[in-house]
Image 1 (cartoon, rainbow, N blue to C red):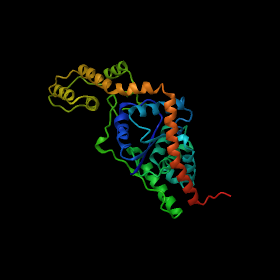
Image 2 (cartoon, rainbow, N blue to C red):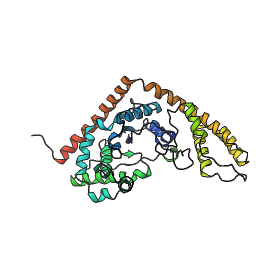
Image 3 (tube, rainbow, N blue to C red):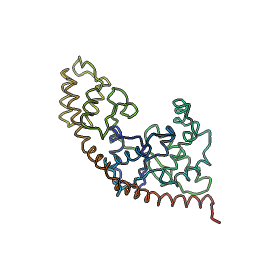
Image 4 (cartoon, rainbow, N blue to C red):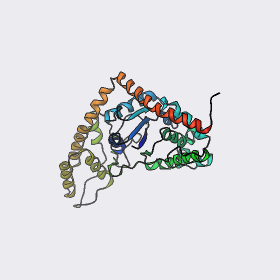
Length: 329
């Protein structure tokens, strides 16, 4: 069974884009592989070194991933900062990471442009920490988006470099886990781009029905088609994409026909879409609200996940120390 690892940034509430983008696949994946899922609270400090409520965000993400179906009895679910072994491996990898290769990463250059007043060492060595996260469990596969593929390539470089320097075949060279057709990109309600928290165009799993209705009714549309079977412009295509994710086939077919015949009424479509989203999100919202009251259970989940992750991490660090040549006097 292959080992798969994925990190989760503690950014607060999860939206439909998160669910259809990866989370739904994580729930399936945990039954097929040896899966490690961690909440990347160290990583969150690179762009916001003084978060308003780091613990609250970590807690909320933990709750929502549990509500969406991650089973702590099947997968290993833990918090990054609870594993000091990650920080040690990060330090050891940094000793063989070169300034030039780190400065050339696309993400670092983008951060130089977007946050010139906060160019910290954590941003520069972000790929090294990511490599430590992955290789601490000797993961074979990592679900990553296009923007993270260069970092995964660097992880392979660090693994090969360690193996070459110390003349061992210890670390694997992890590859990207491809969800293929199961990965659905959910667009935002503003008619452009993907759904995201920072863009303010998302529908969250914890949103109450009235909030969902208001958001959907404010979604961007146009004046309607003027030619039968005409191609849909981006804002309308986005609404149909969301509908395909949450609505029944006959509902989609009905509004497709109305659009193609130039008979569609967007108000009617939005009302139906809102109700379908409410039906989809309600079970998640119910579980989220229930889990928010269960501090003891959350404590147990984190404790169990930390124990399982630490067993793997301690083994790796012990073996890496022996390979490098650290010995106790």
